[in-house]
Image 1 (cartoon, one colour):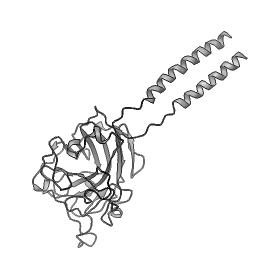
Image 2: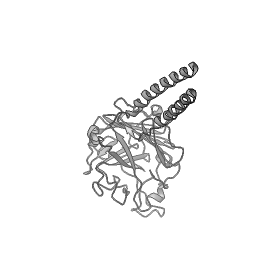
Image 3: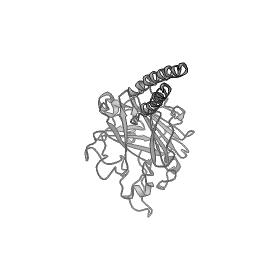
Image 4: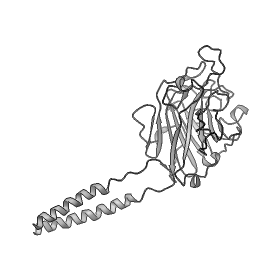
Length: 323
């Protein structure tokens, strides 16, 4: 009888182990004080596993990862189409910088007219209709028509000007690229370039990538305050062709005579780019969650509980042998 009671207790303890360890942790990007990326165009220090399906995202190893469909582009003449065809977007961060990785289908060259421009809008205040609604530099493309993704900052990375070369580190300088400034612009709602030397990018035609480290201060964000209550960044992304002066290459549509058609080559979207921008709006946006919280305490609690339960099991087994 004693053995039956002890076996019953043992069964309950084993079951409790299964229940105790079944803890779901909300996914998101933690502000990792020690996270860093070498900004050189080499993506080997990005270690997250991308989604298994196109036009989908996941969180993996501290990275937000979007996998984009290949060849879902708008065929704009005089543009390196494969070079502007996004295949992946990754985001991570630390307390000073937002890190970005954009991968392309085949970035054939750098520093030449027709190479892509990357436009990333960031909705910071999450107030419908607040901020600007256009992708910059006369791209004739706009964010969500609902007004729910209007932006307070827009990052523009231009790969078509002569200062861009493989692995060369490009710093922000507070002067827009079309006015002879750096090909890294961070625009406020007045279209001023507020980028500083603390924000940088590098591109690689070897790896078909662009890596960037954008200073939180250039985005007007103090992450210790902004993300304290589980806040998030709402982003939209397009690419266009750009010329050697840092201007968007005009697309006149299938007829070759319509200046109002969106100039976007690719867009982060669930649809193909021609479908998404048929009304000149990109209605798809992504909300990227960040948190300042440390890894949840229950994980440590689970370890303590496991040690306690295993100890009890050992004692019970010894009692079984004695009886």
